[in-house]
Length: 347
Image (cartoon, rainbow, N blue to C red; front, side, top):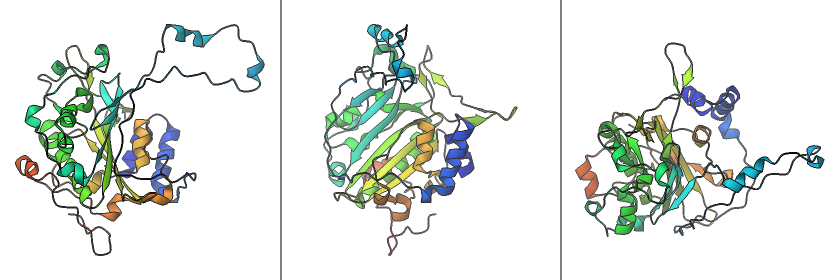
């Protein structure tokens, strides 16, 4: 996936957006962020509260319109209910997520792993089952029967293997709000699983690793007329759950010190069969590209002086093992470093 293609993908909504993203690729090393106050990077976290936000308060009209007396009240529609969009914030023991009611997939799912959490083995996925998330209104949620004979796996965004410290935590990773339709052979059961293993192995170098995972719906150029279009399958009967074209992972590898360094990594993978020999760094992208493509922001409060590039600190490469071998040792071998702390050559 070339930088030029990613620049176009990330700015699909407008020509100006494409130009801005291209500028990011060319000048991202010169980008300056507004100074912000350093925040700690603790190795533990508390679950957020699940409270629904009130309807937004309309912003005041700019001068000279603020002195006008309008004969209409458009916000009066709120008396019948706030139309949305409503992003269902879903905290669980092992994840925090925001759900997209339109696609029936999450916008993003966040997790936190540490050496201690991964070394604990207090659960068995054989006791877990896929379940619909009843915290999502019935008409907007993904259903179990949507995946039946769809040809797609119920692909975990936060993997079950990251939550074996508790059976309840493990069970909650099987909520359909933590799933997206994923190609099985060659992706969910192979390359994607190796990427999840890579994330776990980062805890051999970092005491705290946070990962945000989610779907993307990226455009493809029509070979007939040369125009870019977003097209994706919808599974279910009636059609209900969108099939993402791509998936992203944004990784925050923390050194555990208050105000310490955070190594950032961002990857975008197609929802398709990928050869296990494909280098992981071929899917590395600037975090700004994912932000433009998704409409999300991931590190707006992280000062530039605390940021490190993950793939300059460790070797971003996969350790390819079959499923049975992965299950024996979830932590795996640590991604290697060279003597000067820089990555050794990738394969």
